[in-house]
Length: 230
Image (cartoon, rainbow, N blue to C red; front, side, top):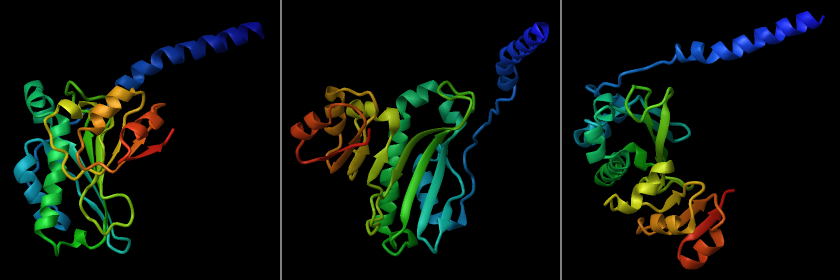
């Protein structure tokens, strides 16, 4: 019996040792090419966006549910951009996402009869694919989400952003963040960092945080609603 237990434990040990090797060999790497065609559901909007950011982003087919007025759109950074460290340094991910948000809003404002202006809930997400670029991982990684939350969705412009860890770079980005009213602060950020981020968004109305500085932040920035999501 003792020998059987030892043999079993040895087998388990061997499996645990070789499993990472087996899984690493199955990692899916992709190449995200530039977009050359438009999707009919959003062709006008898509052409407007890609005329400006087509060297950096590829738009996937959107999910449109007319009955529920629901719209979600995934955008993926193209590999010619992500693999060029100099280009990423010159035009960081945060800049591309924020410029796309503002371009989206510009199009809706200039086209008031566009269907997304009719009370749709709108969400756009930005992904970094596993394309062997310096910042990529073994899986699709979401770098940012922009939306027209919160309900009601009478306002169609994208005013809520969650740029995850990249929002830490907002204070020194040189971006205007015009029209951003709702943000989520990164976990484990201190009060000084939180204040620098908050002050980078001139139109801010609400902040969601996960750290211990909430009462101090609310006292120092009383004009902004501070919500604890811990």
